Length: 217
Image (cartoon, rainbow, N blue to C red):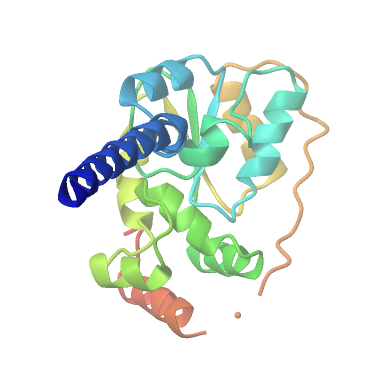
């Protein structure tokens, strides 16, 4: 009788554990994957709904330009939506139909800027489409392009319907790009702010790698 009761209790315990795991998946697992690994078709639909898609390596005033477009009444990505979570710094091309502004250049100061503001590992994960990976992980996995600068540049510089802006840029250069993209709003109020950045072991290794393997040659 005692053995029989133990068997029943064990069976009940196993069923309860399975039930808890299933419930946990529906409550948290699906949400995690929806927030961190968005379906490609949803990404394409999202990007093609924007008036302009701004993408960069980070550290190049792309947020300012994105906010400027928004101020002018254009539909752009938001910091708290798919753009801010995954797409503002991605190296991946999802569609050639969305009007895209790709900002690149000045890689060393851009990396210093992100390090200074504690965005470096957040942004490197956005570029590679990963979550929670360390700088050391990327240096070991991609020894000649850990940040993804070269791959991002290669992908976006060849993508149709993409305009390319090299940082640092002048007010006149940005105004010219905006006109070429077909926007006719007044741009006299553009403000170009000078960079205020200026340099730890893994970070120093990252800088050394791109001195050796220039991403834009």
